Image (cartoon, rainbow, N blue to C red; front, side, top):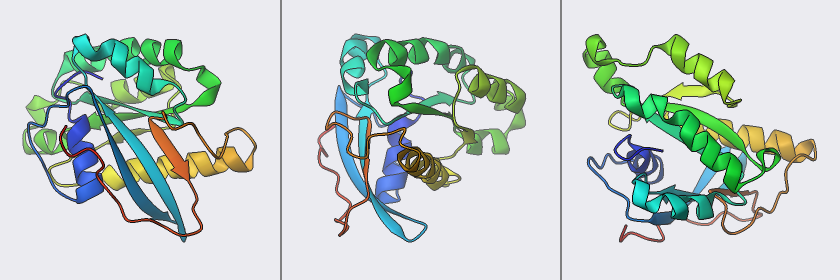
Length: 197
């Protein structure tokens, strides 16, 4: 995804419950988080990859073996939305389509609520894009307020659990997954394993 759309802010809100503005990822960072969903604890392994063009080949590496890809764009930045198909193509060339699923996320909805004229992508356009890229859903979020951030990961876990139950996903994804999801017998503490990024 493009830089400055708020990918790292989404993860900071989800993992630490904080808002960290103007976070720029250098290369990639890995995080772990335990999510309790419908009475079960799920360990999520999350890769945050840089959006700058110079890191694009590195991003492809971390896409391999992914269970899910969160494709994000900024609701106030039309160009970031128009670049979504480019990132989907990168995903498709990095990992077979049947090995992962995608969720489309529109960020910075708080800015749109504050000033409706700042919206550059309509809900209809975003839903059409979601269908076009075969995403499991489209979610509009705010890392500032936390709106719908947890919903992203709950939907991912729900879809993954359905796939495992149907025999469509390997319950033990590779260590390089963008999202490693396991259902452990005993949960571990959420950790930010690479705070330097």
